[in-house]
Image 1 (cartoon, helix red, strand yellow):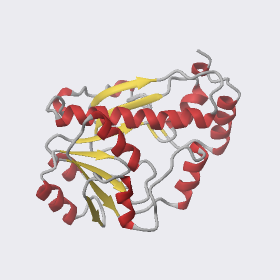
Image 2 (image 1 turned 45 degrees about the horizontal axis):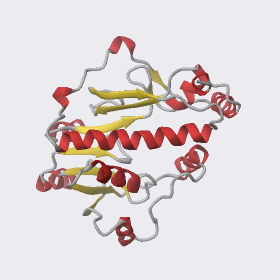
Image 3 (image 1 turned 90 degrees about the horizontal axis):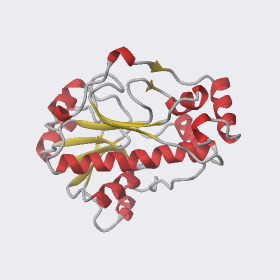
Image 4 (image 1 turned 135 degrees about the vertical axis):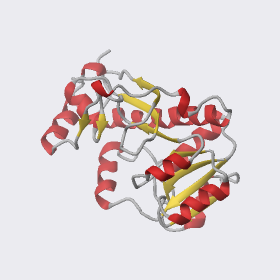
Length: 243
């Protein structure tokens, strides 16, 4: 079984589930952390997507089952890192964990305890774009923008790479169009990785270690940089938006 780490109010959880089903992943459960999205992060989400995704209901836990009659079992934990969560992962016999909106940094103990690893899809090309706001930095730098599926390690955005991919954008793409596509492509990429894992065709040993000589950590964009990146995208001036 593959455990999807998320929260009850994560807007992408139903999309992760739908993509996994579409790829033929059959044995899924939700592990839902009690930490919810902050107001700051919610505002950032609204700026980036402008309502492109409809999130799951936030006012009632049973409404998770509106995802469909075959909605997987959901388990509710105080923290994905808690001792009770560790026992739950073992009890369920989880072969893999998937970051479908985990709000915490996972402990090394948990990462190392999962037989086929913890899969994450990072919105940036690793290792050149580690850290935050990689899409905005990529636009600002006129650099390639994409996603990297990798097995998680103790530190953020490290761990062996499964696959990296970058995208070209039509010249009329807005900043929201670019950001939304990154999210959508990341969901599809993650689902394809999970199918390979469930079929026994992918494990951490099959992934490629990141080249630390090319690694760079990007910090959250200052307001002036983020505004410049958004304006650049909206004007069609991002280099990979005119191909």
